[in-house]
Image (cartoon, rainbow over all chains, first blue to last red):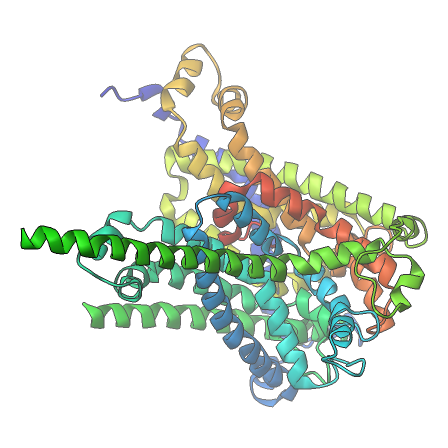
Length: 301
Length: 293
């Protein structure tokens, strides 16, 4: 084969010049602010006090990690919201993807329709559901009363437990479609011959699922769960609209608490420190996840 | 002979049983999918009908699910009284500008990575790490900087942030499209005396335009949907639809249903359009954060 010499030949500066606009922008809008924020996290910058600030060492970090019940509570809340959401999204997503893979007619249109919730903003999803949960005019109370299940106009956001259930419900509604799309793509990449061979060998559907579908889908499932896990640690817009962290802070997530520290209390340095705690937490979580996968694979091999 | 007899007796029976199971399986499949469709699309349907209700329909019992006389007055109210027209325009302008500038900045970078392996693979990892970065870690320093510069209530400030947030995603997808592009075409253009930049703009871009449209639509919707930067960095004149919607929550659980639902309908409209246009790319786009800011 002839080597396309001209297009590959280049002046030394060209690759750099082509990439430079993006690099410069990233440096100014991401790298510099992150560095500035890191610097701020060791200061006591508080906009409600004034523009002066001085070095306070690790004070913000120790306060956030050890002494602030609100932030520690939000870590717990975030975990309580993430765990059931991930499980439900994975199970429901897998179920729907398997149903879809059985469908012969109209699969693209059904898939596109089911994918819509994942395309809308968390804010819009939460707003639609907040209105559905509405006390007097909400669809849920009205339907419940019409069917005779509810005899009062129930306030769904009056108890912490039901509020968390509601947050998980909306989150599952919002992001199960994503899991479904990922798993459907994974299912379609499994060669059909494997199923035919298994059928010839007399394997029943249950055995085919356990010995073919699940092992071959494992990697896709890991990737899907990983992406959802990382995104769930950023949960903000949905909380802002659906519960605003209430009742009594029971649905405040880490991102939401950090937002309040920065833009309600104006404790910029403290919020910067909290945001670095979150970044660290997500990093540890990601590494832990990969490490667990590696250990399990090593054990399997 | 004995074997043949046995077979003819057994096979039809098994085939029949098989057919019944299959029929039952198909019925359950469609039943399951119908349930899923009701669950995932029901809220949209309810929001749409609610936005078309008259005020008296809200108080009716038994509840009105489909208004007998649909009216557009909540949309009119949203556009006039609640300045919805302005915020809708804001969202459109900011999303369009961010989409264009993200493409313009990302294309040469993607070209550099695809053709010359600029950054030697490290750059791609760096871009992926940016995708994982929580927005809350960025908004605090950016707010302080913008406040100092006095551009917290400014289109430009938001567009710059969205452009940069979008670079990782756009570069990642564009590199894929550019790798598939035949080098010979580009080479031919350059032999004819085209500079590299011109070859990129006039030869490559028209051919990979469909791919670029995918990136553009995803970045449009991501900007449209973004909330954290929008609520912190916008003022009364530059609010986007996402910020407008949250203003309806201040009335407690029984807020202003008519205009609130109308604003949700307008807010999810682009998502509906894009979900159908980009069916083939939904997995990739969503996985890479194509709809998040």
